Structure formats: structure tokens, C-alpha cells
Length: 297
Length: 235
Image (tube, rainbow over the protein chains, first blue to last red):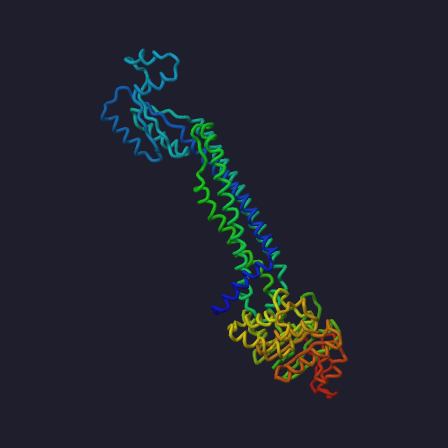
């Protein structure tokens, strides 16, 4: 195709968008609505996942250290734990620390003084795992060290894992459904816009236009509609989410003890490619497919 | 220029469009194709435009056997044939000038060529002053002139007009017919499908009459009957 023709067809596409602005608006509106719903569901799902993850990491493993251990062996074990896969964080809690923490929780201030010289509490390593699914694996590794006695929230972890799995499944299914609905709605609207103009396509065929010549303006139009259709929800979700974080972020933080929402940048990082792919991809492929039926004259 | 060799067309639903028929139209001819609706007139034109495929037989246009053309080559065949329809089929949101220029964009003419050719053609069909009008601002006759301008702007050697006067009053019909005759005098092969007897009778051109999918009459000017035999060949 000649450069001159390509330029003309791009212009035709942009012009077509304006001349058929009502249909274009309908298509863009459909894309906007679908992507808005999709974006909201995505944000909610991501946040649930994120908060669950934060809760999970609070569930630690305690590895109590045998009383008669040598200093050298202790540092060895500390290093060993640190190098165990999936271990995120290790803190050593000495006997004194343990007693202090314990005493803090009691009303009797003298508790610390009383047991100072005959401390019954063992020293321990407090271990946090990167993901709750990996807890069993870490526990197995730690149990192999004879000087440690490992304790952890076995049942709680199980529940968490189950809840996690169901949330992930449900949100995947919901988002998957939404994507399919968006695809169907958008292609249908584009089909309609092409159907309205089937006469135009028919005339072009009689004038000896090649398929590529007929298709290009429609595809340009589709892409433009797609771009408009995804710019609006990207902007709306970004601003809306930012607003939500400002309003809710603090109260959530104090209410749920240090929990916070997924940062807006992270949400947008996930959403923008999806939006652009759906918006522009569908605009382009949708119009190319929709037009194919009418090219057979 | 246009040769049909034993061409027949049966539609998928069993309707017979054209029974086995042979036909030749030479370069520079002016031919009327007449017949009632449903006679096979439209089938004949559609076959020439490769809108439909013949069930049997071969069609060649401009020394190319179009029955062998692949789908992607069809646009190039259509560029050799200008088409005019009863319902004009102009692009409603383009002006007269743009409608004609569009036909040239389709064949990828340069802007310079377009600027040169379109005014000439519009002058030829008598629409120089209406170049900036949109189709809905024009009379039927003017719309058909635009369609004719569009059909000839690429210098296609063949012009097919399917009931070009079907939507026009008698006076305008005559203007259109005169215009088609002028175009024919410039060397374009013109094929006009019509059922307006009066026009056919007065213009004294070759007339091919189709009835029930068969050519029943092929007469050259003033009653000279062609010797060609159109007999049915069993399938």
C-alpha cells in the first residue's frame, strides 16, 4: 500500500470516528463501563489478597532453644535458620527478653524481679515465613535441628491457607467472567457499528477496494475507540483509588493494627496493561473480525 | 471483451438463475439487457462482477478468465468495471467531489492525479457546480450522475448499469441515457440492464432479452437479428 493511501485511510478512520460519533460513543461507553467494573473488582481482589498476606506473615513460628546450649552452637543455628528457604525474618529472643515480654503482660510488676534469677522461660527464635503455604516446609527443616523445639499455629495456618485458596479462586473466576463479558459486549457493539456501515463497505467492494483498504480505517477507528475507552477508566480508577486510600487508609491502619491497602501505583501497574490490552486489542481485533463477514461480496 | 462460455448458475436453494448460456460482447459496444424481474438479468450482471460464481462454464473479461480468479484478485477485476446502480449507492457523508475522489483513492491514485481528474469528470457529467454538495442535497438525476462520474473516473473499459433509470422520471431518464451514450462514444463498453421498453426501442442498440434464465432474443440495431444460436445444453 502506498504511503499516500495509508495516510488517507488514517484520516478516513479519524473522520469516520467523528461522523459516526454516536456509535463510537456507544462502543467507547461500553468499554469504559466494562473496564470500570473490571478495575474495581481487580482492586478489591488485590486488596483482600494483600491484607491476607499481611495477616499471614504475622503468624510466626517459634523455635525454643534447649537450655544447655553453647554460644557457638547458637550462632550456628541462627545462621542455619536464616539460610533456610522461605524464611523472611528471624529474631532471637533471649531468656531475659522473653521474661520481659511476659512480665509486661501481667499486672504484677514484681514478676520480672521475682523470676529474674530463676527464669523458667526458654530462649527462642521467632521466625516469619514468606508465604503461609511454605510453613510446613520450614517447620520440617527446623525440627531436624535437635536443639530446637518448634511450635507454630498449625490449625490456624490450615484455615488461612483454605481461605486464601478460596478467595483466590473466587476472584479469578469473577475477574475471568468479567473479562469475557467485557469482550462479548465490546465486540458486539463494534459489530453493530460495522453493521450500520455495511452499505459503505459494500460500495467500497464494488469500487474495487482491497480488503486491507476497507479494513484499515475501521481498525484505526476501533483502536481510537479503544484508547478513549481505556483512558477514562484508567484515570477514574487511579483518582478514585487514591481518594479511597486517603480516606480509608488511616482508619484501617488503626483499626486493624498496621494493615494498609495496596499502594495505588501497584494497582495501576497491574491494571493498565490489562486495560490497554482489552481496550485497544478488542477495538482492533473486534473491528477486524466484525468487518470480515461483510468483506465477502 | 466479455465472453460467457456455456455459463449456468443454480443457486444453493435450487433456484435456476441462468441456464447454460453463451454470450459475447465486444469492445466499444452498447448493450441493453432486458427482461422481467426474476428473468436472470441480475444473475447475468452479478456473474460478470464476480459477485457470484457460475455453477458451470467460463467467463472471461478483458482477456482474463475471471472464473479462475482468487478472492484477493477480485478487487482488481472490479477496477476494470465501473458499476452504476438503481439506488445510486453514494457514500452519504461524502460530498459529490469526495465520492468521486474516493473511487480514485481506492485504486491508490496520487493526490495530484485526483485533483486533476475529478473536476474533469464532474464537468463531463454536468455536475461541476455541485461538487461540494452532499448526496441528500441532490436530485435523483444528479445523484445518478455522481454515481456515473464515480464509475468512469478510473477510465475503466467497461461500465455496467443495473436499472440506472429505475428511480428517475422519464425526462431525467433520458438525460442519463444520453450521458451513457456519450460515455460509450468515448470507447467504453456499456452494458445497461433495464425493463423500460421505450428507451430500448428509441435508442436502437443491441438488445439481449433474458427470460426464465435463457437468452431469448439478441438483436442488433433496427431489428437485425443475430444469427447466433442459443440452445440449451443439457447439464
